[in-house]
Amino acid sequence: MIARPAGNPSSAAGAAPSFPARGSFDIRVQDCIDFLRGLPAESVDLIVTDPAYSGMNRHLRLGHGRIVGHYGKPDNARWFHEFSDDPESYAVFLGECQRVLRQNRHIYIMFDSFSMLTLGALVRDSFDVKGVVVWDKVHLGMGHYFRRRHEQIVFASKGRRKLSRRDLPDVWSVPRIHRAAYPTQKPVKLFELMVQASAEPGFMVCDPFCGSGSSGVAALRGDCDFIGADIDVRAVDIAEDRLARFMATGQDPLEPVR
Image (tube, rainbow, N blue to C red; front, side, top):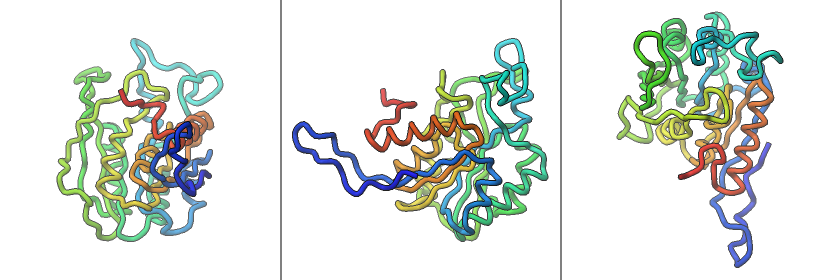
């Protein structure tokens, strides 16, 4: 766990540059269910997450062929461990999210088109669904019929809570990342919109599928604390290094400002 700095570095000549104090972060190598079960009830203020689904991986195509081998296994280092997307496992996941989220708080869960049809409705069993945000990736992706350019984000609450911002539409045009350092790496801006809409400084932001840590960067930029997990040690290594470097320099090494 990286604690909040006690103070800013000196800005005297020749000293390290000064950056605003940001929150702490704690990222663990754990299965999402084990991770959530290890958190106290009502201990986080905002959940933002992008689960990696086995259904998505099974249908993924790169160029003209499928990934061959077992996902996340030594014979296929190009991909990562995944969450089983059967309804029973997903219901357990949602139940744990509901338990750890404080009352009168928000949750954002990302879905692709396939998982939205099979799993999206289950969110209503644990939360009060307020709407669906469409992420417009701006650039076209893969697709056998219509080329994919969007994903969905289910926005829901536990109890009652207003948005911190009322100027946001339900379509977010945020360009997807090309040549990302990590598979399915999402833009920090996407998570920043969630944090800006639903968090306050000092909130604990949680991501049980943190991947490369984009959600963590967004949380720290919003002066929030961050706790997350990923089952793949490679993802955690990337995320920990990314967030530590961001806290030290104020720059995101995976999405540098151009």
